[in-house]
Length: 90
Image (cartoon, helix red, strand yellow):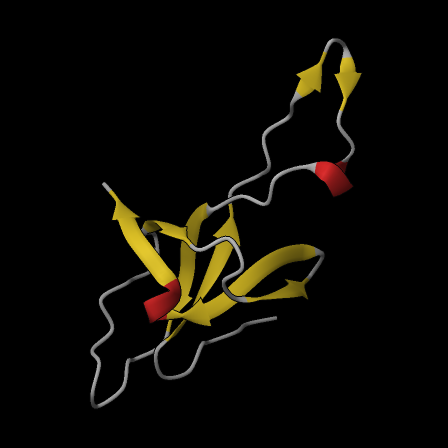
């Protein structure tokens, strides 16, 4: 399936959650910290008031509760407004 965000929205593939163990106990997926960084997969064209700064391939940081989680072909993505992105990682 092909998806193209509209206006000032971007499609982000979150970085995988880091595996953590505490004294040999593996923390289950439900208790893992939500990743706060990811890669832009697709970006809209922006709006007349705000040009699109992000592009596919950018690695970004975003807010903890930013975006809406969607699943395409078994992969989980986030779709959010460009203003929800905090920084581009160099």
